[in-house]
Image (cartoon, rainbow, N blue to C red; front, side, top):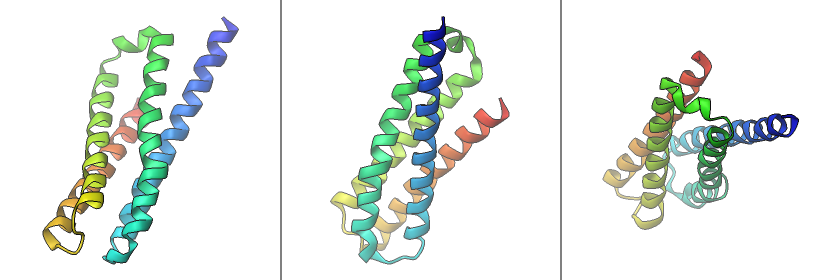
Length: 135
C-alpha cells in the first residue's frame, strides 16, 4: 500500500511539474511573440521544442499512469472533459510549432494563424487549470 501511495504521489508531482512547465512555456512564447519581431523565431522554436514538447508528452503520460494506478479516476466525469481539453491543447501546440518550422513567418496571414493556435493552446491550458482548481 505504501509503495502505491509513493508511486502515485511521484506521478502526481511529475504531472504538476509538467503542467507548470507547459503553461509557463506557452505563456512565455505568447509574451515573446506579442513583440511582433520575426527574428525571435529561433528562440521560440527552441523554447517550444526543448520545453513545451517534452512537457506536453510527459504530462498526459503521467496522467494515464495515475489513472491506471487509481482506476476510480475513470469514473469522475469532469476528468473526461479535462482530458479532451488537454488533448486539444496538445493539438494547437503542435499546429503552431508546425507553422513556425515550415512556414514563412514574415507573411501576416501565417503570423495570424500562429498567434491563433498559440492563444487557443494557452486558453485550453488555462481551462484545464480552472477545472482542476475548481474540483
